[in-house]
Image (cartoon, rainbow, N blue to C red; front, side):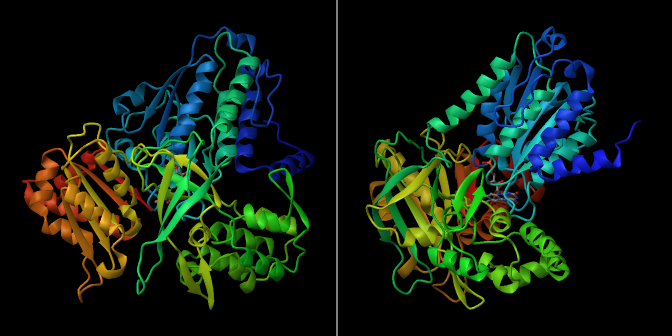
Length: 602
Ligand SMILES: Cc1cc2nc3c(=O)[nH]c(=O)nc-3n(C[C@H](O)[C@H](O)[C@H](O)COP(=O)(O)O)c2cc1C
C-alpha cells in the first residue's frame, strides 16, 4: 500500500482541521467514492455544500432501482421531519424508499434490508425516544439477526449540553456494526442546530448510495434545493413568525416559591396551525446586562466585527442574538481548557462529578470570571454554542382559541456564586408586555396526541407547568362536545399559591368535560405528597381505566416526577392484576409501543 508523504499528511491535516464533523464525514465518503472504480468513473461534480450535486456514472445508470429503508426514532419530531424529507429526496433519485417509524417497523424485516439510513434522537439521560424503545430492545436481544448484507448510516440528533450526547445514535451505529452491517459513513452527531449537519450527511449518503437508472445531477440538485425551499416556505426555528403578545397573567400568588405565567400570543395571518399536544418554540435574545458584563470582562469593543455562519456581525449583536450564554457544557470547557493550555481546567472538565459539584449552574460569565479568556473575539464566538429557541408545551386548543397560542411558563431564576442567574427565554417572557412580538414556530408532537377514538378514556398526569398540555386537551374535548372519560392528576407545592388554572379545572369538572381530578400539594403538610401517591391511592380505579383501554399521558419533570409515576403505574398494575413485577413492567412497555402511554417530559 502506498502511504502519504509527510507533505501530503501535512496538507491533508490542514484541510481536515478546518472542517466540521459532518464535513469530515462527507470528505471520507468522497474519498471512499473515489476509491471505488464504478462509483468513481463519472464523479464529475461533488460539491461540499447544501445542494451537493453528483453525475450518475454510465455504469450506475444501467443499474436497477435501488431499495433504501429510512428508519427514524423521534420524540419531538426533529428526526421524523428529516426522515420524511430525505425520503422525498431519495425517491426523486429513483430509489425505492420505505420510510418507517421505529415504533411501527416490523423487526423481522431487518435481516432483509440492504440499505438502511437511520435517524434517531437521544432522550432522558442518554436513552432512546419512547417510540424507539421496542426496536432497541430487539436489536440488543438474542433475536437480533446477522446483518452481513446490510450497509447503513446513522444520523444522531442530540444536544451537547447533555453528558450522554447523541448516545442513542452512537449505540445504534455500533450495534448495527456488531451485527455485521457495513458502515456507509461514520455516525454524524448533530447538536441543537442540526440543519446544516443533517444536510451534509444527506448529501454524503446520497453520494455513496449508487445512483439509480436514469437519474442525473439535474434531478438531484433540484430536488435538494427544492427540499430546502420547502423548509423555508413555512415559519420554522430559523425563520420564526413574529407573534404579538396579547396577554400575560401571573398565575402564582404572593408567597409562592415560583413565578409561573400564562401568556397568550397571536398567530393571526401566520398560517400556523397546531394540535393539542404540540410544542411551540419561542426565540428570545439573551439578557443585555449579561451580554454587557461579558463584553466588559473580555475587555473587548462591543462593535468589533466577527463572522458567524458566514455572516459579519458586531460582537454585541452576536452575543445578544446568536450565542448561548446561559449554560456551559463539559465539552465546551474541555475545548476552552485546550485553547488556554490549562491542565487544571482540563482535568476538572474531564471529571464529571467534580465538575457537577463545582459548576452545576455556571453560565459563560462565570467561566470568564474563574478562568479569564485569552481568546480573540472571533475565537470566543466560535467557542460558544448557537443560541436555540426554547420549547413549551402548548396550553391552548385551536378550536377553542382560534389564531392564538397559550403557554404556561415558569420563570427560571436562581442565585449562584453571589449573582442572580436567569433562564434566557423565561426571564424574557416574565418581562414581556402586550403588543411586543416574539419569534415563534410550531413543532408537531405526534407522540403526545389525544386518542383517535373520542370514546377512549384519558388519564392525564402533570406536575407544575407539566399541566399545560392537559388544558389544551380539555379545551379540545370541550369543543368536540365530549363529556367524561377524562381524569386529571395535578401536583404542585401549595394549594393557596400554586394551584395553576384552578378555576378552569373547576369549570371543566362542573360541566363534566373533566370527570375526575386528584391533586397533590406537596408542601401543605409535614409529609411531602406527590402525584404518584395519589395514583397508588387510586390503584383500583386507575387499573380499571387502563383495563378498559384508557390512554395515559405524563407531562413535566423527567428526573423525578416521570420516573416516580412510571414506578407507581408498575406498582398499580402488579397489585391490581395477576402480573408479577416484570410482567407489569412489560405491560407498561407494551402500552408505550401501542401509543397508549405517552410522555412529554423535560
Ligand atoms: C427531555 C429531553 C431529554 C434529552 N436528553 C438528551 C440526552 O441525554 N442526550 C442528547 O444528546 N440529547 C438529549 N436531548 C436533546 C434531543 O435529542 C434533541 O432535542 C433532538 O433534536 C430531538 O430530536 P427528536 O425531535 O427527533 O426527538 C433531550 C431532549 C429532551 C427534551
